[in-house]
Length: 288
Image 1 (cartoon, rainbow, N blue to C red):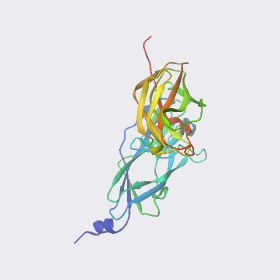
Image 2: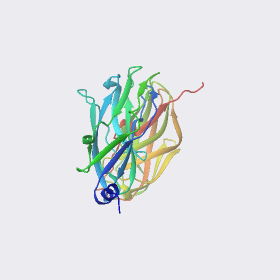
Image 3: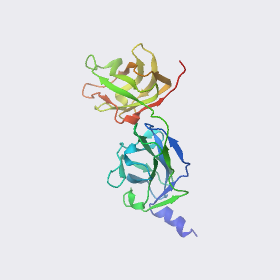
Image 4: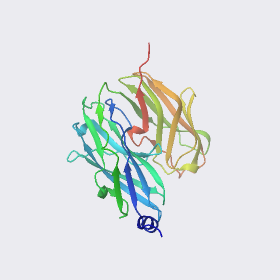
């Protein structure tokens, strides 16, 4: 006969959340995409489970103001908007639209990430915790949380990482149907220190979607191709550069996105940087 636990897993929906073990680490002020909490979500075998939101809490001796934003990622993709911690109680709710789906009998990894402020106080200690099953909205599906250890501590040390500023520019003319059209123009500027840009995800705030733009390229003003995409991923263009693009302090570079436009004018194109962390850059030290 089937055990009661196995029978329950087959007949009733449930979600198990495992907080993965992680070591403490030091991070510099201004650091991006710092993993604060690693979660493994497993669904019972009766049906898929949809997770709509998680509510998290800041712990530790560091100031809440040291953390600029908190957000969720899965499979290398940001799946929530970035949100600031509440100055009142240090909590933050991350909402998933569409819902974060865990297939029946399946497991998915979910990472809680943070961007640190460039003026974060040195020696500040920070943890992000998931403290109660009520803090996971999964359509009233029963949730259990288990943890191998406490949430890891992130301590701010060292010098600021600096940043890269992005400024979008108007297009020369209306985007028309055809090959290799310019669909976005913008400037990148390195603030404070030399920077290496590793990735850039642009979001189309217009109506065009995956099949409307194909063969996208990210290019310099001299025509050097930095990254390619076969098409949009939904409303996003997640460019991963083939090699880091170096911007020295104070330098300004004009970049363009070109694409084969296969849509009518009604499928509008308006690329934006939805969140600061969608531009992945790091400080570099180079011999002169």
